[in-house]
Amino acid sequence: MNLQDYIDVGVSTDLPCLQSRLVDFAQRLEFGYVSVALGLERPGEAPRFAVLGNAPKAFQEAPRKPEDLRRDPVLMRMKSTSVPFLYDQNLYVQAGCGDLWEEQAPHGFRTGISVAMHLPGGCHFLLGVDRDGPLPQDDGDLTRLFADLHLLAVYAQDASLRLLMPQAEAQWAEDLPALTTREREVMQWTAQGKSAWAVGQLLSMSEHTVNFHIRNVMRKLDVGTKHQAVLRLVEAGVLDRS
Image (tube, rainbow, N blue to C red):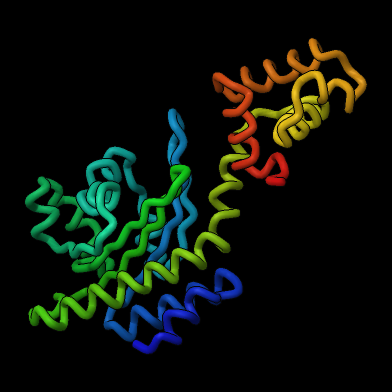
């Protein structure tokens, strides 16, 4: 691969462009399928994912039990490593999950390489490529393949943070309880570092009333401090980041 191939992935202008370039890149390495996912985790809540790729429609629409996702050895390993690793039937059998491999193999997911990158703030980037046949047996060829995909993950992560993050964050916003107009105003000024007294002066209300609204928001979001409430609202796009 040329450096420009990686750069093109990183500067993709929209999601269709990113998907097209990822698929082309993967196919040139003889992988039929490629997927990227951006995940957000918050304490006490289910992770949110935004996914992009060219997996077969039948595979995407196949029902998956939450417990199967939790025991999938590829997903489990991606949670704890940041280096590329390969998977095949042996990995699933050794993990006692041969049935999961049998379910995905007919769709063309027999052998693959996965890469995970773990970022601050509970953000995780995942890249996976899959093929219907075996990986190269020569150590030199396999090493170059791993290096190509690791570098691809770096550039794909950059594009995904720009293009997929809004989708992942939107899921947080959808699950938020409704805030009143006053609560939003109070929290917006609080997010800018204003004290309860200063917010009261700006919004023509007493400090007691400001604290009342803040406590209501904390209760709705089930958090322990106003700073946690602000962080949750900013991450969900409810408050401006400035």
